[in-house]
Length: 335
Image 1 (cartoon, rainbow, N blue to C red):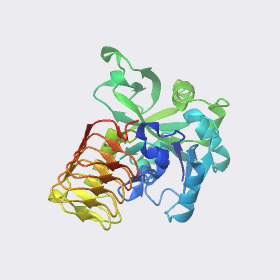
Image 2 (image 1 turned 180 degrees about the horizontal axis):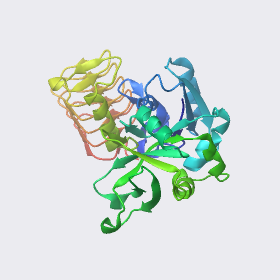
Image 3 (image 1 turned 60 degrees about the horizontal axis):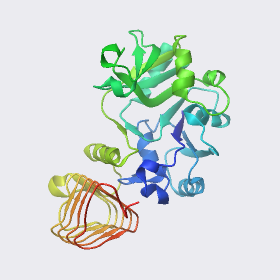
């Protein structure tokens, strides 16, 4: 099966990291975000990933030309913002005339795509979208899904008493080639311009699932994604380490302290007396003695002095933080 991964944005919510590296290439433990997204599909099911992207295209082409993956990667460039629907339509010439899958490039989820495909085939119709149950439907667009598995309408951020359900679009779609006949030309949204139309005709299915669903496009949710990978022991190099064996340590890490629930990139050093808690360190990071790093994203090659206290900070690639420095929230250097 071919899979389109929608990654057309600039990754602004993860700056300054994405000033250096395209978001699909950012490492989450020892794999790129793109690989983490596609992990929802069994290797035996997917033979080609079509990456719909518009930022740092040359960097992505170079990366995927040098790595070995169990599927082919084709990059389709967006020269202007196209929306979710326009991005899918832009990939049409690369698709075979058969059922295909689409995934949001920010989402890490446990959606069982093979089961979803079987459900789609048994239901018929033009499209099946994955659904996730939320406690508070007033913050989302929700789906009116019936007992027959069909979605008949959508509600955008309804009042609690008016909500037809608490099931939201979870960013994975199974589509038939005929869906292109229902798409307008140019930039458009699948959610607003296509799904709402076909729902009224009874040809849109909804597939609910349980497990995990993380939008890894912000620093806090990136750390959620890291926790999902840690809990599921999702790595192929490095291994368990840190306090209580709760962390992942890449190859060549010097751990003199024992991080807690963190990902420590290859070649990094954590000096004695330092606390690293629920954080993600890229490769070749140095943390001096007696520092405290809590819920932070630390960029590649950053050097953090002794006695530093950081909480909820995104540290840039190659940044140097002086001894005794303290910061809560934001980025370093501050933008």
